[in-house]
Length: 191
Image 1 (tube, one colour):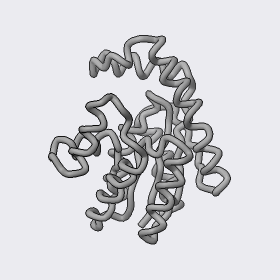
Image 2 (image 1 turned 135 degrees about the horizontal axis):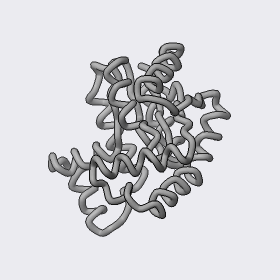
Image 3 (image 1 turned 180 degrees about the vertical axis):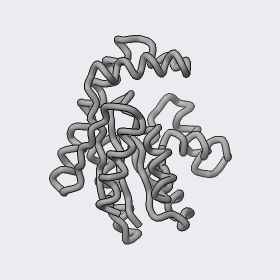
Image 4 (image 1 turned 30 degrees about the vertical axis):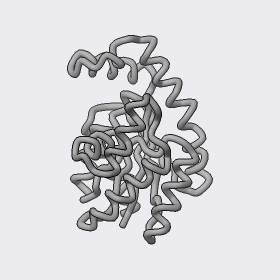
């Protein structure tokens, strides 16, 4: 099994690329946001626990998120590995993810980080807002804050992965196809 983390600031295209990459390499695309919503919608025990936490306006604790991911991994043996989209979000989560994977005889093989120029991120987010109607993509102040939060919170994870030889920056500029080609090339060297 091969396991990739894919990172990039808001608007970098990691969600779009993740879906295509997962299909290309027979990886299970793991988006924790999608997983949280699915567990709650399915009414699972884990979903009920998360719904209770979220209904109080609290963040789902790291151990619950890791438990959810572990449950998904344990039930998904038909894949060549996993592609973690936008998770982990902290160094502590990264360490917990590593421990959980190690307990299953697996590891993080690579952190792919999409590098996109600031002005391009803003342009993409505004464009996405026009297509999807996402309110968080419309306001320039909100966009700047989201990018700042990403830079502040993610840099330590990049350093953490770089120290372990896992960090691989990928040029995230250009067309969806250009970026996909670069990611495929990078991943093909690892798989």
